[in-house]
Image (cartoon, rainbow, N blue to C red; front, side):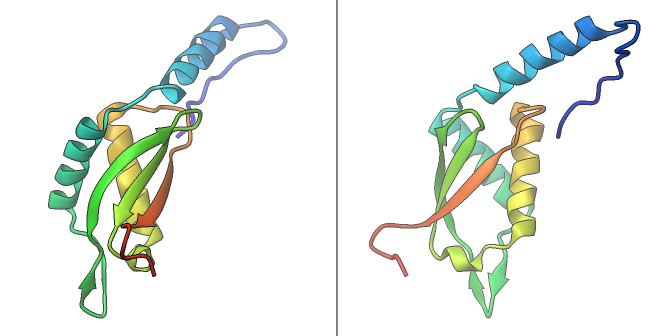
Length: 119
């Protein structure tokens, strides 16, 4: 997820490009998404690739929201976080990058059981 910049320490070639990239990545890392926009993307991602299941039980993602920046961190409220698989979280991360950018910054997801249904 990190951009690659080829520079020369000896000649200083493309160092200005490095600073442009640093500023761009910093702006992307501080970006905030509204809950509605994020949930629209989440619905589309789930429609394209359904959530995983275990022993006939499907992971249900009720909604998600961005809880912080630097790095962008998202909380997903689900029926049972034990049904999640790392590959599906990676899929969601790729969908967030595809739709909103966040180039050069890590994206974190936290799954939380919906209140009243904690296990």
